[in-house]
Length: 493
Image (tube, rainbow, N blue to C red; front, side, top):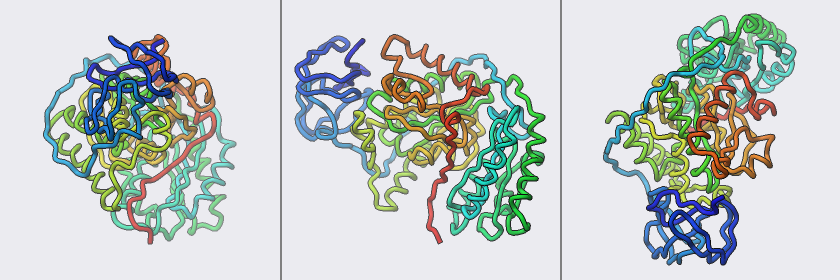
């Protein structure tokens, strides 16, 4: 097994694939380097002398600038590199026009829906309009567990603190999020549970729902009935009777929408897990399916790669706004756009936001960008889409589900247990994590370092996704972890 990897021939640094000791002489590609310091797994070592002020190249692109002279064999990290990022920029369109060779879609057993893509789950969702009825929703979900079985695959409540004391676009976003969840294909039945005096009540959410299957959605305003629990259980029983008629049938993979997210990344995420997801994204796109890449702040530093892959100038302009609008959001709160990576990222070997972004965007594969979505906007265009949402794991993963993802692929080098409203596949960047946290991790991309090719691993991930789409449970589902996190963007009254 190799101990170091130089990702591209242009790179001034290589990444340690295992912990390395000062004094070792390590071969890489066509060269070798003697280490001047211990190098933790995922961290970088200089392959040549790097002068103070010189851009440091990794993935073939600058990941920052040297703060001091760095000798060959030295540890390259936060102590001697700083970011080159700044505020809003002007961009030019240099289209690369990538094309994916079409592939015949394979099938998965899914649940047909009248007004949407097929569901990969047939669950009953209890959605509060406002945080004031969260406890009622959770009590209902607990009592409704008796209905789980057969084609009723689960009953879940999705508490949240919003729905009232909001204004303007912030309030509209919450309404749209809740409306999109009410019409999500994985929900075979939905109870939208209101209080009655909130800003975003049932009457305000309904217009955001668009066309929906009236057999699968029920509404209850708690203040309008004497015993809301009794009435709600009656409505849930009606939904269950409808859901009992549902069966899985073969559905083409072109009907799949898969969200792409990373969190708790390390220095191997951009070498193993994220490129594996990228191969998957290209495979699904070639079958006519859809992937959605989000966490815009973690595109900063790699955004021009995505911009040049936009299918047309209009999408390029939308991507420019996607990036600069998020920078303006940070600046409006007097916050630096580069307040990233996290402490865990740095411990895992990621040094700057450019370093993180160039690894993060590997999840998008090599295909063209076909769509750019606002927060809470439903995806309609097959292929790779970019979605406006922050990097926060729960918020971004929820945003992917809200935009129509039936499942989310979530790469991690540090590990995390959570799940969003849809199956959340945890993909480990390294095998030690996959072996240590088997109760969290679904897929080991670290196998790329022990003999599997990237194409083999990408196809293996495709096979796993099809199994999950067909009903195989992910670790978050087995553990009962389902979370909802709405992007708060305004004042609270």
